[in-house]
Amino acid sequence: MRPRLRFFMTLAPLVVLALASFWLYEVMRRATDAAEPSPERSEPDFYVEKFSYVKLSKTGTAQYHFSGERLTHNPQDDSYDIVNPVVNNISNAEAPMTIRAKRARVNSDNSQVHLYDNVRMDRPGSATVEPVRIRTEYMLVLPDDDVMKTDKAVEITTDRAKLTGVGMVANNATGEFNLTSNVHGTYQAPVR
Image 1 (cartoon, rainbow, N blue to C red):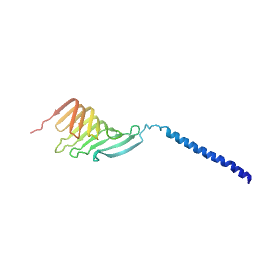
Image 2: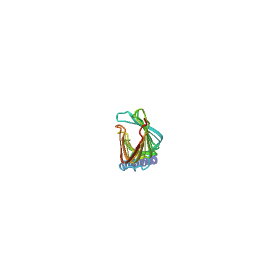
Image 3: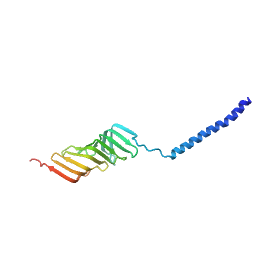
Image 4: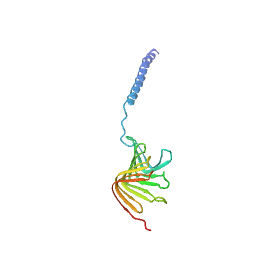
C-alpha cells in the first residue's frame, strides 16, 4: 500500500505541473494571436448568384433596384464586383430608368456604382417625356445624388435627336444634362 501511495504522491505534482504548463501555453498563444494582425485576405470572401436588392434613399424610400448574375465581395476595400448588372431607378414613377452593363464595381457604402463595358441606359417615353437611350463604355452612377457621369465617348438618342460627345454629367433629380466636349448632334423637326 505504501509504494502505491508514494507513487501517487509523486505523480500528483507532476500532473498539476503539466496542466499548469498547458494552461500557460494557451494563455501565451492567445495573447500572441491577438497582438499580431491577421493576414489580409486578397481573395473574395463570398459571392451571391442571381441577386437582387433595393437601395433606399436617405429618407427611406426605394430609390434604385440592383440585380445581376453574380455579386462578389472584396474584403480588401469592402467593395462588390457585379457581373451583368441591371440598375433600375424606381424613385421617379413617371420616368423610370434602366441601366445595363457587362460588369460593375460598387464601393463599400453603395454611394458609387462604376459600370463598365457596353453600358446602356434606357428611359421609356411617357406623355411628358421622350424616350432616351444612352450608350457608352463607362458610367459612374451616384445613387444618393441621382447623378450619372462619364468621361468616355457617349451617344444619346431620342425619337428625333442624336447627340454624341466625350464626357457627360446627367442629374436625374434636377433634369440637368451636360456633354463636356467634342459634341455633335442632329435633330429632326416634327412634321406638321
